Image (cartoon, rainbow, N blue to C red):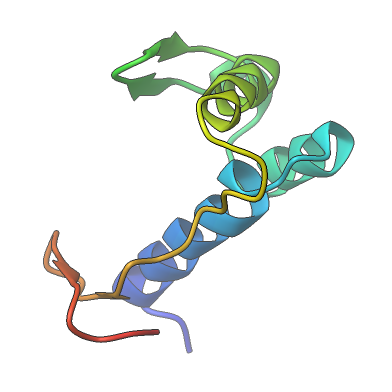
Amino acid sequence: MSTPQSRAKSLTLLNLSSIFGQKDVPTRMQAIADLWVPSADVLFVDALGVFKSHEAISEMVDKIQSMGEAGDEFVALGKLSGRNELLTDEKN
């Protein structure tokens, strides 16, 4: 049975791999549609701006990915603790 905390951890890792780590736009858009609220209701606030649709989120991910180099990947740096912190000494 999934708890709110375990679901939050799962969604965080899915966002990392299926959205921020996904370079194929149609695949990423499907992941956003599957994981997020409907596009008309979405609101994502980030240092890069405020994004109000699935398309805007995907475009923001494109911008973030373009800041890196070929072969760069989004990876979890450690195990999520569930207490608003990342345990960097433990690997997933």
